[in-house]
Length: 359
Ligand SMILES: *Cc1c(COP(=O)(O)O)cnc(C)c1O
Image 1 (cartoon, helix red, strand yellow):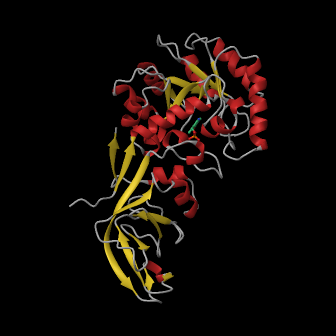
Image 2: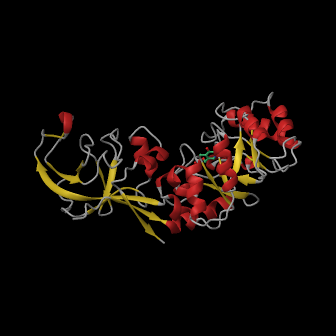
Image 3: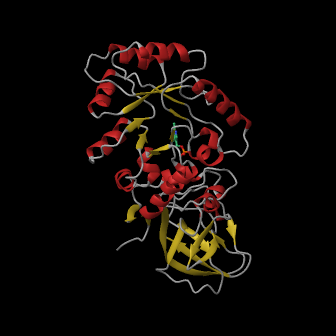
């Protein structure tokens, strides 16, 4: 029997969100970020639906290879580049664009013997201090790359924001100024903006934008709902009611007996838990939707089940469908009640949760 626990992926909403990116950044090309299995939405169905994107960006070689082998001819950028001669050869074989962020990579490019000319995005660290050449190493890195026959002379420039999700962040202002300063003398293409930059910092758009979160309909801006930004949630996580039990006032529910009913009520037991990726840290203020109404959790999240306080008159019965997040319940709300972010929830879903696509 079907357990009824699944994630519906509405590819129409994905396309809508891509069109939104175009509206926010009408003069930029779009590099759709599809790393981590397209933020949990399924790499190949997502890249297929994003046929209108100008390029894809991934974190790992394997992700890029899967896209290529599915038949896509689009440019694919490896955001973390390569770490060995073997990986570099794979980049040539699959014609990946590469991020160069470290001297070791320049040395590997210098030692490369093959016939391929690599398209390089040179990464500068404008303040995130994760990947990239710092401002004092940067000119030397560029000069070295320009001497290499293995590197296409149209070198592009990139950097990444650390705080663009905060409204009016001074750190973002500093990063933007640094990048603008470098880009003033830069002939090739440039990219800086992630989703939050696309929405909040139009000056950061440059030639290419790199949306991830907003494509999937999660809000990249702290304190603003996805809906208010014009985005539609792509994933709706569903489960089913498997039991409804009556509870008297003063009785407790679940492991640790840490939730007690204030009055007599009904508790719906629902077919999802942390074994599916529903966050164990979800507090009792977290809500789910059953038959168009919101109800709060009661007690701790178990591995395979959650308990929901549905009151006395809901009419809810076993078999009824439950929405944990998605079309009617913003994932950002659930993330907030579980002390995390939407990105994290999407990526926690386990293989037990099937993905079902709506074209
Ligand atoms: C993940 C990532 C993005 C996309 O970020 P979102 O906040 O999801 O839009 C863009 N650029 C780089 C370098 C990334 O690692």
